[in-house]
Image (cartoon, rainbow, N blue to C red):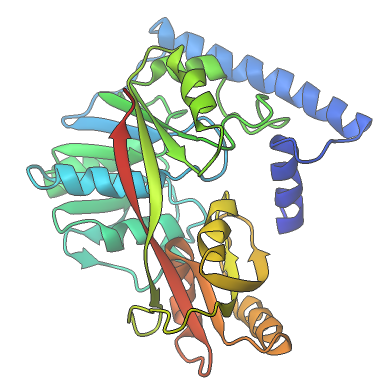
Length: 353
Protein backbone atom coordinates (compact mmCIF):
# COMPACT_ATOMS: atom_id res chain seq x y z
CA UNK A 1 0.00 0.00 0.00
CA UNK A 2 1.35 3.45 -0.89
CA UNK A 3 1.90 6.20 1.66
CA UNK A 4 -1.00 8.15 0.14
CA UNK A 5 -3.35 5.19 0.50
CA UNK A 6 -2.21 4.56 4.09
CA UNK A 7 -2.79 8.18 5.03
CA UNK A 8 -6.21 8.09 3.36
CA UNK A 9 -7.34 5.04 5.32
CA UNK A 10 -5.91 6.40 8.56
CA UNK A 11 -7.97 9.57 8.09
CA UNK A 12 -10.97 7.42 7.21
CA UNK A 13 -10.56 5.20 10.27
CA UNK A 14 -10.38 8.18 12.60
CA UNK A 15 -13.34 9.99 10.99
CA UNK A 16 -11.31 12.85 9.55
CA UNK A 17 -12.86 12.15 6.15
CA UNK A 18 -15.81 10.14 4.82
CA UNK A 19 -15.77 7.43 2.17
CA UNK A 20 -18.07 7.59 -0.84
CA UNK A 21 -21.05 5.23 -1.00
CA UNK A 22 -19.35 2.53 -3.07
CA UNK A 23 -16.17 2.40 -0.97
CA UNK A 24 -18.13 2.54 2.28
CA UNK A 25 -20.29 -0.37 1.13
CA UNK A 26 -17.22 -2.43 0.20
CA UNK A 27 -15.56 -1.68 3.54
CA UNK A 28 -18.74 -2.59 5.43
CA UNK A 29 -18.83 -5.99 3.69
CA UNK A 30 -15.15 -6.50 4.44
CA UNK A 31 -15.71 -5.64 8.10
CA UNK A 32 -18.62 -8.10 8.28
CA UNK A 33 -16.47 -11.04 7.17
CA UNK A 34 -13.49 -9.93 9.28
CA UNK A 35 -15.75 -9.81 12.35
CA UNK A 36 -16.99 -13.33 11.68
CA UNK A 37 -13.42 -14.64 11.41
CA UNK A 38 -12.06 -12.87 14.50
CA UNK A 39 -15.09 -13.77 16.65
CA UNK A 40 -14.90 -17.40 15.56
CA UNK A 41 -11.19 -17.55 16.41
CA UNK A 42 -11.80 -16.07 19.87
CA UNK A 43 -14.70 -18.51 20.40
CA UNK A 44 -12.42 -21.46 19.66
CA UNK A 45 -9.88 -20.24 22.23
CA UNK A 46 -12.53 -19.47 24.85
CA UNK A 47 -13.98 -22.98 24.49
CA UNK A 48 -10.46 -24.51 24.64
CA UNK A 49 -10.90 -26.02 21.18
CA UNK A 50 -7.77 -24.11 20.26
CA UNK A 51 -5.25 -24.02 23.09
CA UNK A 52 -2.62 -21.45 23.94
CA UNK A 53 0.91 -22.84 24.31
CA UNK A 54 2.61 -22.44 27.67
CA UNK A 55 6.34 -21.79 27.91
CA UNK A 56 8.75 -22.00 30.84
CA UNK A 57 8.82 -18.28 31.56
CA UNK A 58 6.47 -15.55 32.75
CA UNK A 59 4.88 -13.96 29.65
CA UNK A 60 3.73 -10.33 29.56
CA UNK A 61 1.97 -8.94 26.50
CA UNK A 62 1.96 -5.19 25.84
CA UNK A 63 -0.57 -4.76 23.06
CA UNK A 64 -3.29 -2.59 21.58
CA UNK A 65 -6.66 -3.02 19.90
CA UNK A 66 -6.03 -0.77 16.92
CA UNK A 67 -3.66 -0.45 14.00
CA UNK A 68 -1.07 2.33 14.11
CA UNK A 69 1.11 3.58 16.90
CA UNK A 70 -0.31 4.23 20.36
CA UNK A 71 2.97 4.53 22.27
CA UNK A 72 3.71 0.92 23.26
CA UNK A 73 7.46 0.97 22.65
CA UNK A 74 8.45 3.38 25.49
CA UNK A 75 6.24 1.36 27.85
CA UNK A 76 7.91 -1.89 26.79
CA UNK A 77 11.34 -0.32 27.33
CA UNK A 78 10.48 0.92 30.84
CA UNK A 79 8.89 -2.40 31.80
CA UNK A 80 11.87 -4.42 30.52
CA UNK A 81 14.41 -2.22 32.29
CA UNK A 82 12.50 -2.43 35.56
CA UNK A 83 12.12 -6.22 35.51
CA UNK A 84 15.68 -6.80 34.24
CA UNK A 85 17.09 -5.49 37.53
CA UNK A 86 16.10 -8.83 39.05
CA UNK A 87 15.47 -11.26 36.18
CA UNK A 88 16.67 -12.05 32.66
CA UNK A 89 14.24 -10.59 30.13
CA UNK A 90 13.57 -11.20 26.45
CA UNK A 91 11.52 -8.84 24.31
CA UNK A 92 9.89 -10.45 21.29
CA UNK A 93 8.77 -8.21 18.44
CA UNK A 94 7.01 -9.06 15.20
CA UNK A 95 9.69 -7.02 13.42
CA UNK A 96 7.24 -5.18 11.21
CA UNK A 97 8.87 -3.73 8.05
CA UNK A 98 12.07 -5.62 8.85
CA UNK A 99 14.06 -6.90 5.87
CA UNK A 100 14.88 -10.03 7.85
CA UNK A 101 12.75 -13.11 7.35
CA UNK A 102 10.01 -13.29 9.97
CA UNK A 103 9.76 -17.08 9.68
CA UNK A 104 12.55 -17.78 12.16
CA UNK A 105 13.87 -15.97 15.26
CA UNK A 106 16.49 -13.27 14.69
CA UNK A 107 18.57 -12.01 17.61
CA UNK A 108 18.68 -8.21 17.44
CA UNK A 109 20.36 -7.79 20.82
CA UNK A 110 22.27 -10.50 22.65
CA UNK A 111 22.35 -8.88 26.10
CA UNK A 112 25.10 -6.23 25.71
CA UNK A 113 25.75 -6.89 22.01
CA UNK A 114 23.53 -5.16 19.43
CA UNK A 115 23.97 -7.08 16.20
CA UNK A 116 22.82 -4.38 13.75
CA UNK A 117 24.15 -0.89 12.96
CA UNK A 118 20.76 0.74 12.28
CA UNK A 119 17.09 -0.05 11.91
CA UNK A 120 16.91 -0.32 8.12
CA UNK A 121 17.50 -4.08 8.22
CA UNK A 122 16.03 -5.28 11.51
CA UNK A 123 13.14 -2.78 11.76
CA UNK A 124 12.83 0.56 13.52
CA UNK A 125 11.10 -0.57 16.71
CA UNK A 126 13.33 -3.63 17.44
CA UNK A 127 16.42 -1.48 16.92
CA UNK A 128 15.05 1.24 19.19
CA UNK A 129 14.32 -1.40 21.83
CA UNK A 130 17.83 -2.80 21.51
CA UNK A 131 19.38 0.62 22.02
CA UNK A 132 17.30 1.61 25.04
CA UNK A 133 17.06 -1.53 27.18
CA UNK A 134 19.57 -2.72 29.76
CA UNK A 135 22.27 -5.36 29.32
CA UNK A 136 20.09 -7.97 31.00
CA UNK A 137 17.61 -7.92 28.09
CA UNK A 138 17.60 -9.89 24.83
CA UNK A 139 15.64 -8.55 21.81
CA UNK A 140 14.31 -11.06 19.26
CA UNK A 141 12.15 -10.66 16.14
CA UNK A 142 9.88 -13.40 14.78
CA UNK A 143 6.23 -13.71 13.84
CA UNK A 144 6.06 -17.07 15.65
CA UNK A 145 6.12 -15.84 19.25
CA UNK A 146 6.23 -19.37 20.66
CA UNK A 147 9.39 -20.34 18.76
CA UNK A 148 11.01 -17.02 19.67
CA UNK A 149 10.13 -17.51 23.33
CA UNK A 150 11.62 -21.01 23.30
CA UNK A 151 14.81 -19.61 21.75
CA UNK A 152 15.02 -16.98 24.48
CA UNK A 153 14.47 -19.50 27.27
CA UNK A 154 16.73 -22.28 26.01
CA UNK A 155 19.58 -20.21 24.57
CA UNK A 156 19.60 -17.18 26.87
CA UNK A 157 17.92 -18.38 30.06
CA UNK A 158 15.19 -15.75 29.88
CA UNK A 159 12.87 -15.80 32.87
CA UNK A 160 10.41 -13.16 31.62
CA UNK A 161 9.13 -12.78 28.06
CA UNK A 162 7.68 -9.42 27.00
CA UNK A 163 5.64 -9.44 23.79
CA UNK A 164 5.83 -6.09 22.03
CA UNK A 165 2.36 -6.22 20.47
CA UNK A 166 0.65 -9.58 20.17
CA UNK A 167 -2.75 -9.01 21.77
CA UNK A 168 -4.46 -10.62 18.76
CA UNK A 169 -1.93 -13.45 18.61
CA UNK A 170 -3.33 -16.08 20.96
CA UNK A 171 -0.97 -18.97 20.20
CA UNK A 172 1.28 -18.17 23.18
CA UNK A 173 -0.28 -18.23 26.65
CA UNK A 174 0.12 -14.90 28.45
CA UNK A 175 0.41 -14.55 32.21
CA UNK A 176 -0.32 -10.82 32.09
CA UNK A 177 -1.78 -8.64 29.34
CA UNK A 178 -1.36 -4.88 29.33
CA UNK A 179 -3.52 -3.08 26.81
CA UNK A 180 -2.35 0.36 25.65
CA UNK A 181 -4.91 2.92 24.44
CA UNK A 182 -4.36 6.32 22.86
CA UNK A 183 -6.33 8.94 24.83
CA UNK A 184 -7.03 11.00 21.73
CA UNK A 185 -7.61 8.45 18.96
CA UNK A 186 -8.99 5.70 21.20
CA UNK A 187 -10.88 3.29 18.91
CA UNK A 188 -11.29 5.63 15.95
CA UNK A 189 -14.69 5.18 14.33
CA UNK A 190 -15.29 2.05 16.49
CA UNK A 191 -15.29 -0.17 13.38
CA UNK A 192 -13.23 -3.27 12.71
CA UNK A 193 -10.79 -3.64 9.83
CA UNK A 194 -10.94 -2.69 7.02
CA UNK A 195 -13.67 -0.14 7.76
CA UNK A 196 -12.02 1.03 10.97
CA UNK A 197 -8.76 0.65 12.90
CA UNK A 198 -9.90 -2.07 15.31
CA UNK A 199 -8.11 -5.40 15.09
CA UNK A 200 -10.37 -6.83 17.79
CA UNK A 201 -13.92 -5.99 18.93
CA UNK A 202 -13.90 -3.49 21.80
CA UNK A 203 -15.45 -6.05 24.17
CA UNK A 204 -12.20 -8.06 23.98
CA UNK A 205 -10.70 -5.56 26.41
CA UNK A 206 -11.97 -8.11 28.93
CA UNK A 207 -8.92 -10.27 28.06
CA UNK A 208 -6.57 -7.63 29.49
CA UNK A 209 -5.33 -7.49 33.08
CA UNK A 210 -4.40 -3.81 33.04
CA UNK A 211 -5.02 -0.75 30.87
CA UNK A 212 -2.50 2.01 30.18
CA UNK A 213 -3.97 5.13 28.61
CA UNK A 214 -1.30 7.16 26.82
CA UNK A 215 -2.10 10.81 27.48
CA UNK A 216 -1.81 12.67 24.17
CA UNK A 217 -2.54 16.01 25.85
CA UNK A 218 -6.16 15.47 24.94
CA UNK A 219 -8.65 17.74 26.69
CA UNK A 220 -11.02 14.77 26.84
CA UNK A 221 -8.69 12.48 28.79
CA UNK A 222 -11.33 12.11 31.52
CA UNK A 223 -13.76 10.88 28.88
CA UNK A 224 -11.27 8.21 27.81
CA UNK A 225 -10.80 7.13 31.43
CA UNK A 226 -14.55 6.89 31.99
CA UNK A 227 -14.89 4.87 28.78
CA UNK A 228 -12.46 2.26 30.09
CA UNK A 229 -13.67 2.22 33.71
CA UNK A 230 -16.75 0.20 32.77
CA UNK A 231 -14.48 -2.82 32.17
CA UNK A 232 -13.47 -2.83 35.86
CA UNK A 233 -9.76 -3.16 35.16
CA UNK A 234 -6.81 -1.36 36.78
CA UNK A 235 -6.02 1.80 34.79
CA UNK A 236 -2.77 3.73 34.57
CA UNK A 237 -1.96 6.95 32.73
CA UNK A 238 1.25 7.27 30.76
CA UNK A 239 2.21 10.87 30.10
CA UNK A 240 5.04 11.46 27.65
CA UNK A 241 7.07 14.62 28.11
CA UNK A 242 10.07 16.02 26.23
CA UNK A 243 13.36 15.10 27.90
CA UNK A 244 15.93 16.64 25.57
CA UNK A 245 16.90 17.28 21.97
CA UNK A 246 20.22 15.96 20.69
CA UNK A 247 22.09 15.81 17.40
CA UNK A 248 21.77 12.45 15.64
CA UNK A 249 25.28 12.59 14.21
CA UNK A 250 27.23 13.79 17.29
CA UNK A 251 24.78 12.82 20.10
CA UNK A 252 25.44 16.26 21.66
CA UNK A 253 22.48 17.81 23.49
CA UNK A 254 21.01 20.86 21.78
CA UNK A 255 20.03 23.86 23.89
CA UNK A 256 18.43 27.06 22.64
CA UNK A 257 20.75 30.02 23.16
CA UNK A 258 18.20 32.76 22.43
CA UNK A 259 14.58 33.46 23.23
CA UNK A 260 13.75 33.78 19.53
CA UNK A 261 12.22 30.60 18.09
CA UNK A 262 14.58 28.79 15.75
CA UNK A 263 13.22 27.84 12.33
CA UNK A 264 13.12 24.09 11.76
CA UNK A 265 11.61 21.43 9.54
CA UNK A 266 9.91 18.66 11.52
CA UNK A 267 9.37 15.25 9.97
CA UNK A 268 8.51 11.76 11.18
CA UNK A 269 7.18 8.35 10.20
CA UNK A 270 5.06 7.40 13.20
CA UNK A 271 1.47 6.29 13.63
CA UNK A 272 0.07 9.39 15.35
CA UNK A 273 2.36 12.39 14.66
CA UNK A 274 0.20 15.18 16.08
CA UNK A 275 1.69 15.12 19.58
CA UNK A 276 5.25 15.11 18.22
CA UNK A 277 4.57 18.34 16.34
CA UNK A 278 2.77 19.83 19.35
CA UNK A 279 5.82 19.27 21.56
CA UNK A 280 7.99 21.21 19.12
CA UNK A 281 5.63 24.10 18.49
CA UNK A 282 6.22 25.52 21.97
CA UNK A 283 9.91 26.17 21.33
CA UNK A 284 10.39 26.20 17.57
CA UNK A 285 9.10 27.93 14.46
CA UNK A 286 8.13 24.93 12.35
CA UNK A 287 8.48 26.00 8.74
CA UNK A 288 7.10 22.73 7.43
CA UNK A 289 5.67 19.51 8.90
CA UNK A 290 6.33 16.39 6.86
CA UNK A 291 4.67 13.04 7.61
CA UNK A 292 5.76 9.74 6.15
CA UNK A 293 3.69 6.60 6.73
CA UNK A 294 4.25 4.65 9.95
CA UNK A 295 7.39 2.45 9.78
CA UNK A 296 8.49 4.12 6.53
CA UNK A 297 12.03 3.08 5.59
CA UNK A 298 13.92 6.20 4.52
CA UNK A 299 15.86 6.29 1.27
CA UNK A 300 18.50 8.65 -0.09
CA UNK A 301 15.77 10.07 -2.32
CA UNK A 302 13.69 10.96 0.75
CA UNK A 303 16.64 12.79 2.32
CA UNK A 304 17.37 14.65 -0.91
CA UNK A 305 13.75 15.79 -0.90
CA UNK A 306 14.06 17.00 2.69
CA UNK A 307 17.27 18.87 1.90
CA UNK A 308 15.61 20.58 -1.07
CA UNK A 309 12.75 21.75 1.15
CA UNK A 310 15.28 23.03 3.67
CA UNK A 311 17.24 24.92 1.00
CA UNK A 312 14.05 26.40 -0.45
CA UNK A 313 13.09 27.70 3.00
CA UNK A 314 16.59 28.73 4.09
CA UNK A 315 16.50 26.27 7.01
CA UNK A 316 19.39 24.09 8.16
CA UNK A 317 17.85 22.22 11.10
CA UNK A 318 15.61 19.15 11.08
CA UNK A 319 13.97 17.53 14.11
CA UNK A 320 12.52 14.03 14.13
CA UNK A 321 11.80 11.21 16.59
CA UNK A 322 13.98 8.53 18.17
CA UNK A 323 12.04 5.91 16.24
CA UNK A 324 13.00 7.67 12.99
CA UNK A 325 16.61 8.08 14.08
CA UNK A 326 17.15 4.32 13.86
CA UNK A 327 16.50 4.39 10.09
CA UNK A 328 18.34 7.59 9.26
CA UNK A 329 21.81 7.12 10.69
CA UNK A 330 23.40 5.33 7.73
CA UNK A 331 21.97 7.84 5.24
CA UNK A 332 22.72 11.15 6.99
CA UNK A 333 26.15 10.42 8.45
CA UNK A 334 28.01 12.06 5.53
CA UNK A 335 25.71 15.09 5.17
CA UNK A 336 27.36 18.42 5.97
CA UNK A 337 25.81 21.80 6.69
CA UNK A 338 22.54 20.46 8.10
CA UNK A 339 21.63 19.33 11.61
CA UNK A 340 19.42 16.28 12.08
CA UNK A 341 18.22 16.53 15.66
CA UNK A 342 16.21 14.06 17.72
CA UNK A 343 13.46 14.72 20.24
CA UNK A 344 13.83 12.29 23.14
CA UNK A 345 10.78 11.70 25.32
CA UNK A 346 10.40 10.18 28.75
CA UNK A 347 7.24 8.64 30.09
CA UNK A 348 5.68 9.08 33.50
CA UNK A 349 3.23 6.33 34.50
CA UNK A 350 0.75 6.88 37.31
CA UNK A 351 -2.23 4.97 38.69
CA UNK A 352 -5.76 6.28 38.15
CA UNK A 353 -7.44 6.61 41.51
